Image 1: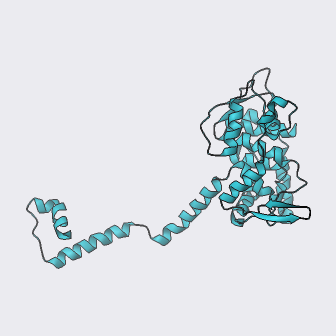
Image 2: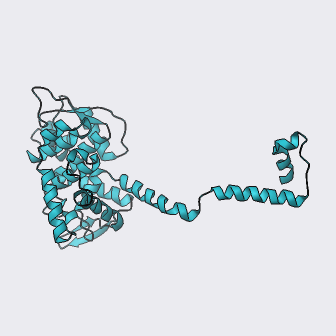
Image 3: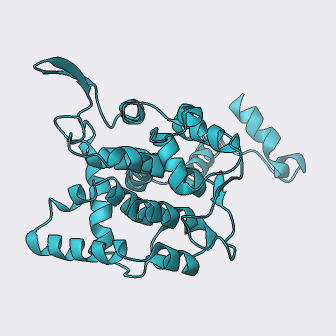
Length: 302
């Protein structure tokens, strides 16, 4: 059967110019063709390394800014954020706004003579296509249905629940840390445990994928050491957002703690240079893609 298929597929056979030879010649010819085709395929060992690296990078990119900030704040073994950190709640809401802007769902209104300051410019709805993330879609639904529009600072307060307007209490996104932790559990980054704290039991989420967290920490360290660019306009947008939001959530320091003394001083000094920049001035230099990043920073440093 294989021979008959081979005969039917060869054009020179149909033209009458081909004369079948001994079976051994056909066999050797088929084997040589198969060997030639096989030599074109990459060796398994050669492809494994790059593929593994690409898969690791893809997994890292699947983390949202909210998840990255929470991961930086969670204690590896204990599985919870510091009880003394009262900034991370609002910081995570800022992450939601920046993530929506980076995904093209919202943007700031254009600057005008009356509204040049980032703190005065309103957040405008751009697209309601689903993001695939429950927290982002919930916030996007609120922004889309709100008239009149609100500023970045107002949205952070509304999403956090820190508002005096009883008609807007339903804008609060509840249990953000717990929902983000469960998302990281589903992605294999954290695990779930129960811990007893004398008077009550608490669900904790210790780190189970230490490699991914160390990669995240290394990315932040490199941003101020080996890959320091000095000019904020040249930084990757997501990296710039991560640095500013991690600082606003009071977890940026966690990335610098493992460094040696000299590296620590260098990294913290350079981070201060970045964090002391004027958001309105930097926004004027940048394109619209980073406006929301600087606007959230302005809201936290006002």
